Amino acid sequence: MSTTLQNQKQLFGHPAGLYVLFFTEMWERFSYYGMRAILVLYLVGATTDANPGLGWTNGEALALYGWYTMLVYVASIPGGWIADKFLGQKKSVLFGGILLVAGHSILAVEQMWAFYSGLGLIIAGVGMLKPNISTMVGGLYQQGDIRRDKGFTIFYIGINIGAFLSSLIVGYVGEVHGWHYGFGLAGIGMALGLIQYLVGQKHLKLVGNFLGTSENKIEKEAMKKPLTKIEKDRIIVLFISFLLVIVFWGAFEQAGGLMNIYASEKTNRMLMGWEVPASWFQSLNAMFIIFLGTTVAAYWAKRKLKGKVSTSLFKMIIGLIIMGAGFFFMTAAAGQYESNGASAMYWLVLAYLFHTVGELCISPVALSYITKLAPLKYASLMMGVYFAMTGFGNKLAGLLGEASESLGEYTIFTGIAVFCVVFGLLVMAFRKKLEALTHGAEDNERDMKNEEAEGFELADN
Image (cartoon, rainbow, N blue to C red):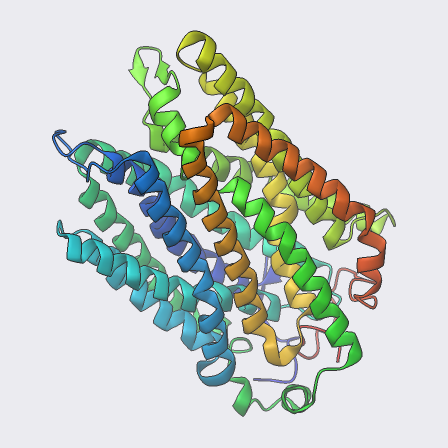
């Protein structure tokens, strides 16, 4: 790795490598969210239908969904550790992509051994790819570059372009033409992502390399030294912020489970004489992110430059509160269903809108926050821990979905809304004390687009 980043080619005000990673992640998320959009619907589909499913109960399907989505992200811990110790992020992303192509392709086979084998390969593949590609994004920017948060938002938009297209395309193919055709189509998308990642390697020469053989003196020294008091304090802040992550995703991931089933079974989906596929509601979140992503990022950047409160922790807390408030719309939907026997689609649209704004305040910001605070030698591992927390949130989402069978959707949706808002306000009360433990990691951020970018650090040494 070179000791400077100043010679990187710039494209639209950001390193060209950002867009290589953008499209890689776009296709990876196309495959993942495409499969996610139809997974629960496939599991609960009747075995006697023209497009037969597995005939599981809602509880059984949501239980598998919870375990699967948890393990997908928990696998990021060994994936990050392998990258830090043996392969480096760049090679780990490559191997992860290969595993994902294999996993999604096997799901196209209509056999139960193929179903479980495919899920296992996808879990391993996401574990290798997800934490490491995110760490590489952070590595494109110098410490203190205010563009880093914007870069992660652009990267996040790539994620959601993939999610948006997959929910429409894979969802339609799966529901109408056959579940396994949908699974196979997701595999084709991942193959395209892997190909473009290989083609774009010339723009990734400065990031994702094996740190053990780095030519950068700062990196070599950082790998050998024990953690400093500042680094330990920053790790404490990260782990506390991860509590926000668990709560957020425990609520948000009702989208692929309980809200997905709710859209299918209890929502009036007729639009001008045509029934909207239930899986298409999964695309709303991604669509809103594509349209609102840069606007939300620009809003926070302007606040930062004006000296107003816009720390990462503040953004994450606000994001949790906004997302939680969105569940009050689902409370209204459940109430309407109990009164009329069906609820209107606009409740789902409004809920996904609030969930999206909340997500934009917490998810890309959390990714960037980790690259600011994580000690260099634990860069990918800490990113892996973050995604593992996301996984625990997914498991929590599955448990809440299962509980709805006995408690009812009205109680679950209202409980989620109240808890998220109250928990967010509680953390807000301790925000300043927690931010003091970052030791100024976010102070003096500025636009370095035209400045020399030297070194590659994930936190101050």
